[in-house]
Amino acid sequence: MKNLPIADLISEQLEENSDQAEQDLVRRCQSGDAHALEQIVRQYQNQVYNLAYGMLGNPEDAQDLTQDVFLTVWNKIRQFKFKSRFSTWLYRVATNLCINEKNRQRRRQTSPMEMDDSQAWIPIDTVTPEREVLLAEQQEILQSALAQLKDKHRTILVLREMEDLSYDELSEVLGCSVGRVKSRLHEARIALRKVLQQKDR
Image (tube, rainbow, N blue to C red; front, top):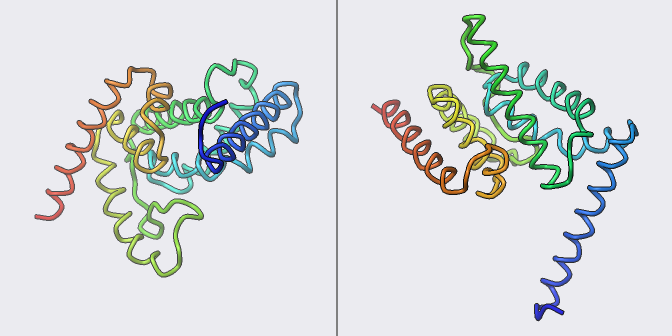
C-alpha cells in the first residue's frame, strides 16, 4: 500500500471512482444510451463552448460548433478505445472541428475571427460579477490578439491557458511529443506577446 497522507489517499480514491464512473458513462453511450450522452453534454458543454469561443472568436459560431462536437461524439464514440481519458479524446474532436470550421471560413473569404463587440471571451461559470467588467475588457484585447496568430499557436494557447490541459494531454490532443508541445507553446507565447506589445504602441 502506498505510504501517502490520508487526504492524498482519499483524493486518489475519489479520482479513481470518478474515472470509473466516466468510463461507465462512455460505455453506455457507446451502446446507444441517449441519456448517457445527455450526461456527457451536461458535464462538458461549458468546456467545449469555451474552447470553441477561444478558437473562433464568435459566440454564435462557438454555439453551433459545440452542438456539432456532441453530434460527432454520438456518431463516433465507438471509436474511443479507452487508451486515454475521454476528456482528452473529446478535446481532440473539438479541436479538429474548430480547425475545420476556420478553414471553411477562410474558403468563404470571410473574417475568420470576426469579433462580437458585445460579448468578449469569458469562460462560463468562472467569473464573479465584480470582476466581469475588468475581465471583459482584458478578454476582448486577448481575443483580438489571438485572432492574429497562426492556427497552431492559437490552438495550443487556448488549450493550455484557457482549458488548463497538461503537457501530456496536449501531446495526445495535438498528436505530437511533449517536447514539441513545450516548444510550440513557447513559440505561441512569444507570438502573442509581440501582438500585444504592438497593440500597446
